[in-house]
Length: 83
Image (cartoon, rainbow, N blue to C red; front, side, top):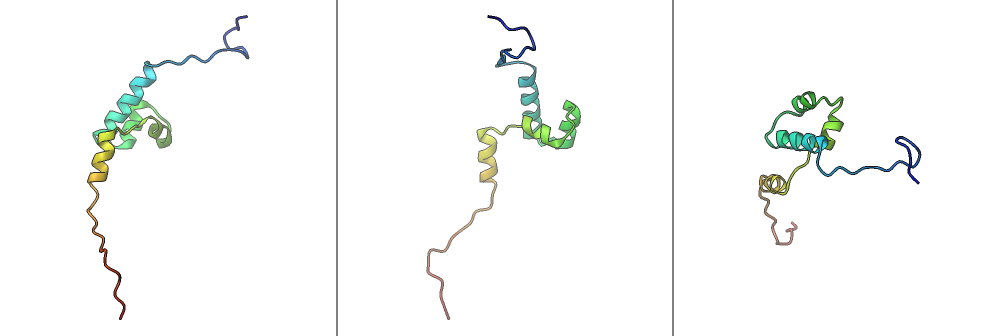
């Protein structure tokens, strides 16, 4: 039994590589290179920052660099002194 295009039993096609893969890569590369989000949004034609955020992905190195960029914090292991 085959279903007609657009019918109630149509199958969803999963595309591993295609136009939207290129969009995801473009948006992610722009974000990694500190292109302002409003500029990325206009370049790809998104109507909202939320949509652009859905296309932006940080890789492991970017996440590691973000964590390594935080200031170092030292914790004193001694008990607090009371007066």
